[in-house]
Image (cartoon, rainbow, N blue to C red; front, side, top):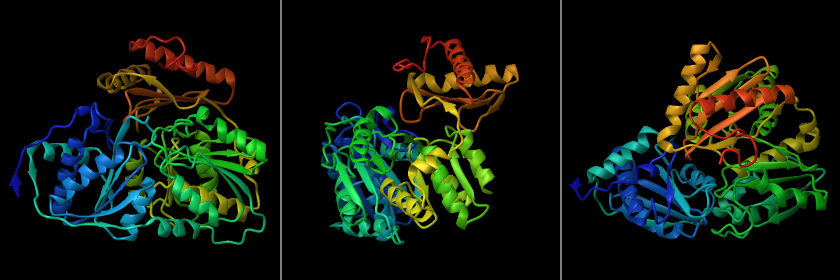
Length: 471
C-alpha cells in the first residue's frame, strides 16, 4: 500500500444512500477519481477484485465514469464496464457476471445538473457509515495500488431476456400499455423489452437525453405523469408505466388515468406473493399508507414498517427474509423470483404477469383498494444543517404531550383521525411530510397539527401542503 495525496469531498455529497452532488459545483471528475481509489481499496480489503461499472444518460456521466474507472484500476481491481443503461442493469451484472462489487454513475431522479454514484460491495449496499468510511479513506490517501485490467461487455440483451423470463405464462388477451421513459437511462432497454413482450406497446420519450427535454424524470410527482395519462386516454390503453432517470423507480397509472402510488402497487405485489408464500414478511417504509399494512395483515402476511431508503430497505429484507418490499418513492424490491434489488422494468413486467394471471384489470385492482384520504409526499425546504434537529424538537414536544409516536424514521404520529409523518430527507435539504385520514375533515385536522409543529420550530408557511407551500 502506498500513501498518496488525500482528497476531501464536499461534505454535502457523502449522503446516506449514495454519493451525489451538483456537477461543477460540489462534484467534479477529481471526486470520481478519488472515490474510485477509495472504493477499489475497500473492495480489495474485502477480498474482492472485480468491479462492474455502469453509467446513466446524463451529459456528465461519461467523464465521471472515466475518472472513476481510472481510480478503481489504480488499486489493482479489474473493471467490467457495461456502458450506458439503467441502474438495475448494473445490479443484474453483479449477480449475472458474479463480480465482487458494482458502482453506478447516476444522478437518479434529480435535475440534469446533478450526478452521483450508487454502490454495492460483497453483495451488500454501500450506505451510511460505509459511505463515510470511503470519505475517510479518500482523505487519508491510504489507497491500495496495482494495475487492474479493463474489459467491456454488452449485457443489455442478456438483461432484457431475464426481464422477459418473468412473463412465464400464456397471455390470452394481450394488453395495450404506454411506457414513459422520461428520456432517462431505461430507454434502450424498454425499446428492446417491448419489442418482444406480447401486446400493443407505445413508447414515450425513449430517446436517452441527459437534458430531460420533455419532463423531469421523477414518476412520484404527478405533474410528471401528464403526458402518460394523456396517451393512455387517447389510446384507451389498459395502463401506463413511467420510470425515473435511472430506471429503479416505477410510476403507474390505470386505464382511467388514476395514479397507483408505491404503497398501492405493493398491495398488488403482496397479494400475489402471499398467495404462494403464506405468512411471509412484507416491508414498506414509514411513508406508506396504513391501509397497506392492514391489508398485508388481512392477507395473512407479516407487515413490517421500516426506514425510508433503498439501501436500508434492502438490508432489512435480508435480515427478515422478506420476499418483497417497497417504498412510496416507487422503489419496489423483489427477492422472490428475482435478486432482491429495486428494478422498475422488472416491476412492470411482473405487474403484467399478475394482471394476466389474476384475470383482473388494473382498474379492478384499484377499485378494490381500501379508501383513505391522504396528502402526497410533501417536501418542505429546510437546510441540511437544520433538518435533523428540527425533527428532534418535534419529537421532544410530542413526547412531553404524551402523543402516540413511532420513531422508526422521523416521527409518525397516530391519532383518532389517522396518522401524520415528519422526517428529515436523507437526499435533499428538506423535511418530508405526509398525512392520512378517513375523510377530508380528519385530514385537515392532521395537516393543522403538522403545520403547528413546523411553525413552532421556525418554519413560516401557513399552508405547507398547498402547491409550492413548502418552498
